[in-house]
Length: 274
Length: 325
Image (cartoon, rainbow over all chains, first blue to last red; front, side):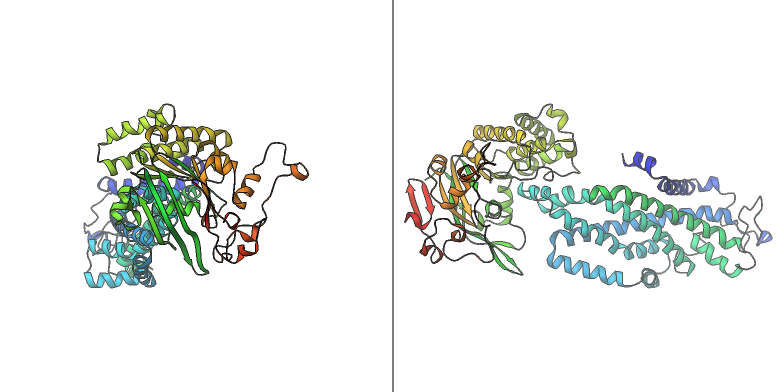
C-alpha cells in the first residue's frame, strides 16, 4: 500500500529508491559487472586515463578504478546496513526502556545517550577505531555504536506518546505484562519513524565510513572501499583527477539516493502518525 | 452479606502536582453485589473515572490511592502484589473505555487483540482462543465474525469497535465490568444497540457492571442502584426508583431537572430548561463544609461550616446533606 502510493505521488523518492536498488544490484553482481580483478596490479597501465578498457582509468598500481568502485559498493552497503542494524537494535532497546519505564531508567539511559551525542560522530569513531584497531568489523562496531542515540531518542519519543494512548491503557487493564505491551502494542506503532531514521542514517554511515577510510582508520587497504580509493587518489589529484572523481561520484550518488528515499518515506509515513 | 462482590471503603485518590494536591476521590464508599448493575453519575471531574481506575490500580502517574480499602471477593486489591493484580485485570475485572476509536491498537488485527487476553490468562492454544473470540464477536452481534476478525481497527466503525471492546472485556467471563462512559463517543442511534448488547451479555454471564456515565437516561433504564458523585464524594445513593422518584440531595434534584424534554428548551418560565448555577469546584481547594454549598439553592448556615452527615432517607437510600439530619 505504501509502495504503490510512493510510486504514484513521489517521483523524487522513486529516483532515490532506484539509485539504492541499482547499487544493491551492482553489489550483488559485482563479479559480473566489473571488467577487471579489483586487486590485480598492472604497473604498465599505471595512471592510465579513462578509456574503453579502463572505463574510469587506472590508479598508481595500474588497478582498474571502475572495478574497484564496483566492488566498493559491496563494502559501503555491507558496512552501512550492518552498522545501522546494530544502532537500530540497541537504540530500540534503550529507547523503549527509557520511554516506557521513565524516571531513573530514563535519566540514566538518556544522559548516557546525550554524552555519546555530545561528541562529534567522526571523532568518536576515530577514537574507537584507534582502540579496536583497523578491521572491517571494527568499523561496523564503531559506526553502529555512534549512531545508537539517534534511534534511542526517536523510539523514546514515540514510546512516550504511545504510552498515553487508550489502547495501551486498555491492554494494561486486560492484565498484560510490560513485555507484551511493549512488543505488541508499542513497538509496532513506532515502525514509521524508525524506517525514516534508518534510511537517513544509512546515508550518514556511508559518508562516515568513507571519511574513516580516507583518514586511514577504516577498512584496511588494499580492500577497495570507496574511502580507500579516494584516499589513494588524494596524492595524484592534480595530475589524474578522475581517480578521485569516480569514487566521489559513487559516494554522492548512494548518499543522495538514501536521502531522497528517506525524505519521501518521511512525507509518506509521518501524517499517519499525527 | 456474602453476595457483595466489590466493596469500596473510604477510598481516597489524590493527584500530587506542582500546584498542590487534587483530591479526585475524597472518601468514597459503596458496594456492588454479584451480577448487579450500578450506575455512577456525576459531572465531568466528579471522580467517577478515577474511582474506576483506582479499582484496577491504574491511576496514572502523579495520582495515588492514599487510603481506603477496595475489597473484591473480600480481598483488598490495594494490598495485592503486582503479579496477582495483573491476573485479576482482564480476567476477574475488566474495563471498557470511553473512546472506541483509540482503544484498539491500530497496528494489530482484531483477532490478535482479542486472543491476547485469553492466551495470557488461560494458557490455551491459539486456534482454541480464536474460536472463543469468534464466538464472542457473534454474541456482540457482529456479522460474519470469521471475516471481521482479520480486519484492522480502521476498517471498523465506532459502534463496531465498541462492540469489539465489549467482546474483549467479556471474553474471560469476568465478575465485574467497569464501563467508563461506554457510549459517550457514539452516535445516539448506536448507543442503545451497544448498551442492549452489553446488558444482555452481562445478565447472561452474571457479570456485575459499574456503569459510569453522565447520562441519567441510561442509568434510569438499566441500573439497579445509583451512586451520585460530586467533587470526589458520593452525595446520594440508592435504588434507581428512589433516586428518580424521591431525589434528596439538591445536586441530584438539579441533575434531574437539567434533563431536556423535547419542546422545552425554548420555553419560558417554568418551561425553560433548568440550569445549575456555577461549576464544579477546583479539586485543589474544595469548599469548606459541604462541597456543594456554593452552588446549592437550599443552603443553610451550617452548610459552609461542617461536613454533612450521611443520612438514611429510606432503607438503602442515603444522602450526604444537612437537610435530612
